[in-house]
Image (tube, rainbow, N blue to C red):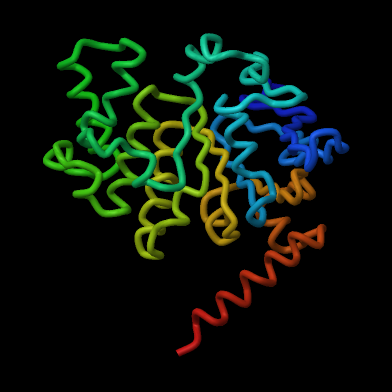
Length: 270
């Protein structure tokens, strides 16, 4: 059997709480991630769903090295990354990238779209400057943006266009894994569908693996072949997409499906 691209074993992230008084007892820590285990294969799209505060975004930050786990193991192609410092992470940045939720706040307002996409190539000292510009244009084209938009600043672009720039930037280093942290939740419904179609197309063409984080079950149903449900820092259910939607096992999953059904019913009313 092939080794998984990403493997988590008993991953924990606890945040200490301050004491209420100088000599008082220390409160119990915040258990943001509390013993999470799963695997993700090359080219697979795994959805991670849960209500706000369930630990999804914290887990994403652990996987891309923005935070360090309290304990547990995170492996990429069998290599342990949970204990790496910034220097140790540097070569792995080319393999694991993140698409953030807020396309406006995650882009440098002082840079053009072309410069934003080319920046990872400059940081990793890949290619001469002229080649970086050419590759940035190719990446913008790959996500459906015109060459003229390479010179636009983030505030001159729509929300959907800004998210396309963020995706192009994440693709610049040709990663194997994209961690997408609610990448369409801030977008209008019509634009959301366009971005999901783009992500699906990119996965097919480039063989990308996705960890796709969302609170909207309809979003992961459109993109992911497996779904994990998170509650209070733990994975409470993980199964194939069809199995989860037709035969949910956990009360949290059933509650989320019922809530989604009510929302759909309200949206369909005249």
